Image (cartoon, rainbow, N blue to C red):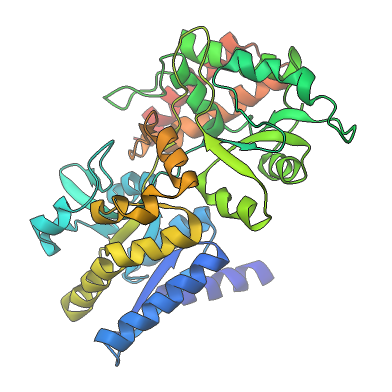
Length: 405
């Protein structure tokens, strides 16, 4: 009964969001330091342009963010703006809870966003559903320069670091690298390194391939044969190993950069090492972070929200977040600024981004993730071989897509 009451109160809170005609709410999952800056920016916008309006922000965890937005928007309410990754777009369009943005902005504004090495803004089924305020959100190789002055450029070079790092000067045993290797998102880059991918141009899964098998075997061997990664390492454990100096390198994303620099770690950023057999770089998924409009917006509130959207994605505001977090801005003017050009970490992140692939925004991606996880993780418990796992992933993905569509 207590859970039912709490859920009811939450639903009432969600459904009440946005009913104030002079209040614009943003939902997001920014870190605390970014929340403070966002709150300051909203206050500036209010003071400069709409002093009689209220502009607020609210944090949710990523999965809650999407679920609560869907509940509220389907109920005719919710926040005016949703700030999230581009892969939210497909499911939100399918459920008709966000509206096309291109009718409310001009061509000059649209052309001011990055188009290379990929499009910053997210178009889907012929319409613009998300305007990016930063690009990337991609995995990189992050290394401790005190332990690895020159990072490996190939997997064989990475393996060769084992003898050098097994015992440090302080006689501390170390792993060469740690990362959340049992999670599919952290596995996908290696499939690309063998010239494969998880779906084709028609959104059909492509998991039962030699590329998937070889990528899974490689990570299995890094763990069991070469022993350069921990036998078990979820995201938090791998992150802690790297921060404490027990892992010389980690595969992680831009969201983690400021955490390491705040700890005064001497870090470097570069590409995930090249696959020796294929000669190809692993291809992490690239996902812009941006704003979407609630489908229920209309009238003056829609006008004010669009104006706020333009303000939040102005080069000046984007560069404030870049200075704070090292994020890659989405506007060409900001991207070409000296702030970006002279930042070693940002330039290194861009170097990795250049060999990444845009994350699909279609709803099928959700079902493919669900299909990959159990079979891929079964490899590390000895329940499946990489070949068996690849076939099982494919079969389950096809089943989930067929049933859900």
